[in-house]
Length: 404
Image (cartoon, one colour):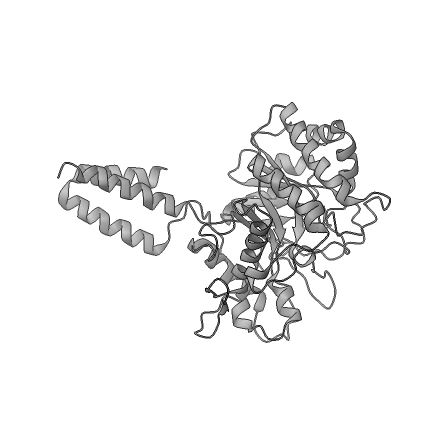
């Protein structure tokens, strides 16, 4: 009987670990878009919505400063046009860090820096057409990391962002997925080795909407996280059953990384979303997709090939991007949208209006701290049992669960 308190304390610790293992859910925010509210107001609204992570496109120093002393983590995206200079000279990377990171770290919680987005596949005028992106991307990433170390910063990881549709051979079955060549051997495999060595993450823009749009055989409910006895696809090689397209695409990435010899690198979904269509559309597919996505990520179920699933996932995007004609920073462009189409046919990707009201009835939460209903019920039953055995132990359990 004396061993019972220790055993129950161990159970409580396991329960707490399970609650903290869910995917961190955030949003992509491009503050350079016109006619947006001031960053301070945006930050306040994000906090009220319990959004705990933000991916910043075109991060100006003022916007980075606006996130200081908040519980919101930042993933910064350095502009594409700076990648060649980062690769050529570490001092160029250090100069960017001196203006965008050093004055605000650690008051602003920056976790990751992406050296550009879709650098390999972009044809944006912001990238020097005489420079081979595959030759400069990894040197730029290495110099960014070394520059961080020079500044005494070792808590920020460095990676780069790809788009699923540009680098993958297939999404189904995941067991057959590989990275496209020559990108796979020239860029992705060396990058994965670097990410594994530095405990960094593989960043991917991933849109089930794209795959659904080009494949009429995929049921809509399978894409929208709808529960239906027929909403599944089986990978006959692995024997795995998939209940939604998002998990299938994430596992395709994981399988391709395994083929490349680096199956344990964490995956961050830097963009996912669904465009709003014309008002005549039957059903609000954007709201259904986003609502289903958030519920799924908060569930902690992970994916069939990786129990923890994606480490983080960012909904694209906070505000509608009406046009990219004025964008010269190279982070987002018409030629590098990873399959997204902006301002065409009435499609927009924002989840919030410029007046800070939500376009959809969706709910974010700090999933790293949020206990699911089933877990709460289990904790309740455990505590009842503990009270019957030893009320002091019950108090210790509650203290562990709700103070951490």
